Length: 278
Image 1 (cartoon, rainbow, N blue to C red):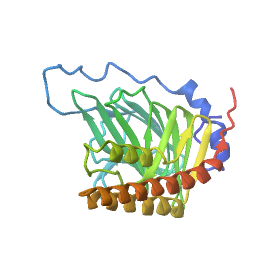
Image 2: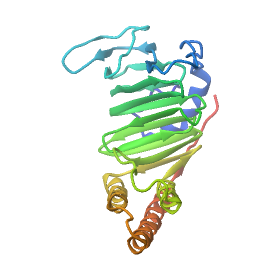
Image 3: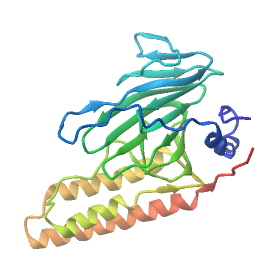
Image 4: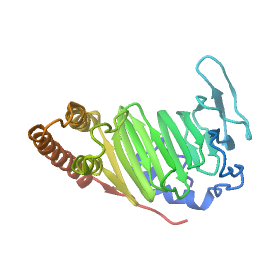
């Protein structure tokens, strides 16, 4: 039995996740030409379908075609995997994405810079599993839904979207979860205390480790978003004088503690993935 059965309960799907490690092709490191250390040009990684079963479409909402193995996926293209079908897509040397039946996903980032590679997929519905090579400090890869960003650190993980709930299960590595479209920025970047608090807040977000799964409801994400928006508002107010600075830093510390409590409650609900060997 393979992992191509997400129509069954999610727990069964997660119990079979380890099968992918045997059947999945290795990421091909030879696909992309090495960049010269002298160039500053931003290039695009090649993304293409390397395997499919059944009926799969690529294109956009207005114009789509039936996909074939070897077809290239361009930035913004949607992949629609119909009922009873399955598809695998390789993104340069960065990742392989496994798309289950009744899944729609689109390629939202595929850049190569002299510093590193950046890839991102947007999951509209259904479920995907990603196998990502070991990332450098300058590399980035994530899977986004309308409400969540799943940022990875060299891993194999599954994202399952149903009834506005987002389930993330990690086979290997770790995945950090955050509300979509929110990233703390700004403020006096020379202020070490401020930078430390920002890092603490960002580090308070839920982290799913290997062998674990977590489900985030819309309320979970809303609670995190409220805290992060309040933190960003404090940062944007500035730290013009010592009294304001101390007050805002204390409030940011309190927000960090609130976020840690939310994350702690969510991480206590983590379910261990049951793996089977074949």
